[in-house]
Image (cartoon, rainbow, N blue to C red):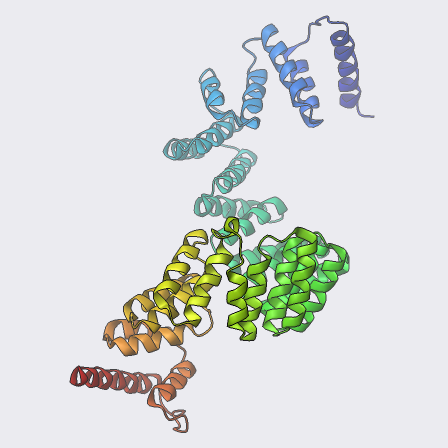
Length: 476
């Protein structure tokens, strides 16, 4: 046992004996600090606070104990109290105190004051160790309050000093992920795996990132590697199944979802994922069986709507409508109810009612891709082309690869005939996509446009658009 371990053990024993007897013992300020840090390290924060309070009664001006008092306030998220208390202390030369004040300022939305203190601290003549500690901790603090750009700037500087700090790499990967820069997040996650190739969390995280980046093959490989480390993780199997489903491999996804359901029959999300996969495979009987199981496991709430959707998929609108009318009053102000109401109205060409229902659904699920897609279709059916274009543009912002959204927007722009918006959507197409679009618009798929350059295709498309506008002007 080291001497300092012996000292703290003896000190704790003496302190606790006196405490049990209700007596106070005189200690130096540094001894009180040692005791407080010991209790903090053991998770006994209340005892640590009591030690600090007792120590400050005996040594009211101790900078060490005052700093520990600030730490306890910040740790307890009492930021205003911490800022008030720190007014008694000088920040000069103490990087740790500056960091505590920066943390308190950030969490009380005083960003300008925090920036000023960060800049003032950086202007001091800090040692290399203090500078590294300060910029690293500042990066963490900025990440905590979602200031990702500034966090990245500090953490990148930290990496220049020590590129092996895994905590910094994790925070950089997180910051880039939150900014939507999945490529950089993957790059940093790969650095973690270079340091520890058998990191379970590392493989899981990079699998998630590949999934978010649409690289489903790589995501599946990453999840497979993680499963060699922890084979029975149901959550990980769910992620792999979802990646398989998104990678157009519904059969294998179904097999894994079914296995997960056997392992975790109380996980309601598995029922919904499996229903979606069955729907993709048009396995409607299996959907009905699973809905029955879900009703047994979780009750009847929402079950009628789910069964009605299956009947719509099977083309039995009459049966779906029968179930829709049986939905009880408490379930009517729900997303599934309004989606079902909208779909049934659309089936009956009642576009006004369909639009109202989907608008209600949109209020309950903001940014829902399927709802925006349906509202676009309803707008087209009502010949509200500008409105349909607005919905499709919104959809493409949320989901740039949403099936057929770009093509439909192109056709709508073609129908409207406005050159500038038409050119904007054309710029988003690859050369091959433009050739396919020209074939469709010209109505002659046998025509060979393979030798056309991009410019020539765009000229032909614009000619077709202008002719369409001329035709409409003559007609109306």
